[in-house]
Image 1 (cartoon, helix red, strand yellow):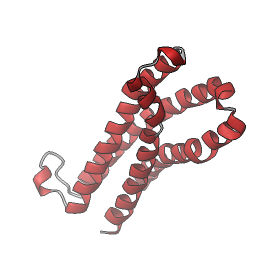
Image 2: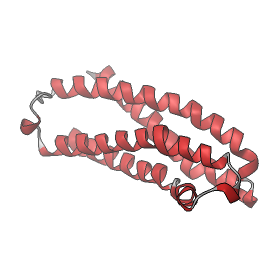
Image 3: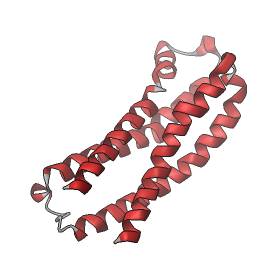
Image 4: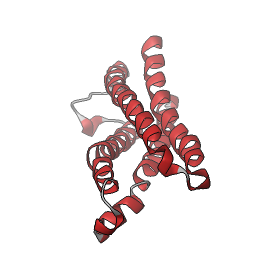
Length: 157
């Protein structure tokens, strides 16, 4: 069980740590002096590489989390019997997975398409999407931090 918990924590650290790095370190540095446009290729390369790590971490978290839950006698197929804190954590995790899917499969590709068009050709909807697209990863980071908090509470119960 020790190794399983360690692997689960490692996957969470990779995912959340990467989100913190991108949001708090990389993006602000690249935006200095209005220079983000000249670093788009670098950012996109880093983000794609991180995406592969995230999806791998998500798979590991699902498998290890399920095994740990069964080890704690939580009946995975009977959610009405789940402890409240476990239900809360799984619900927030599901929301985080949904945000990640939306970012990677919907918002990100649409923003890339929009940024590939001339400013004058962009619709009002396109401009709004580009302007507010950065909110999805920021919200994801906050939700991920909440997952960590719930994990600590769950581990202490």
